[in-house]
Length: 247
Image (cartoon, rainbow, N blue to C red; front, side, top):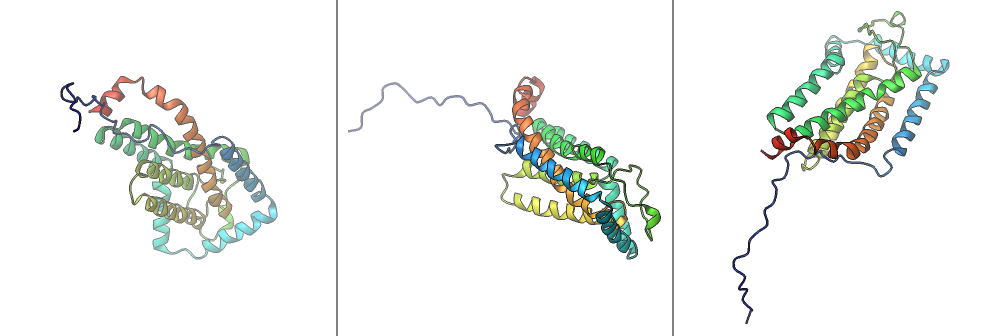
């Protein structure tokens, strides 16, 4: 016979309701300092190599050829992408993400993390821009220059860095979904097309846009390590975040 327990009915322990946010801890490499540092060295090397006169002349020839093959609808699409992924458009996207995740979904940690990943990967490119200080293609040498860019620094492309960073941030947010790999596929496809349009418009050399991918990824890998060490204890002490998460 099975012995009876006379201690009375079993009482389940009270469990705290899990927080809605999923990004209190970001995906992180084991060597989260060494790997981004090594990638940054490679990006710097690419930038310096691209500055050599012979290589720059070969890249300018690509810009000049594309400048002679402009099509009206591609011009419109390329200039629209320039506005959407430019500084004003990028800031608007970040604000919408922040409001949507914080106010609508009530996941403030996710909101801060997604905006932080995207912004850091984007702004990280400025290190290379001002260190390499590569000038944009001379519009006077192009058959049909489409965009009068104000910032003279060409390497890497801030537009492409933002697109890549946004892709990875959205993947981090939705990585538990079965279809999450398609976020990377679609996001990198859009980033690659945006990269091509920057050369098509005539404001970047091919190496500028190619180097944007490792440049932004290096920044995100570094940010993830910093976030995982600093964010959980800091955010855990903010009562208004805890209250919103538990509702």
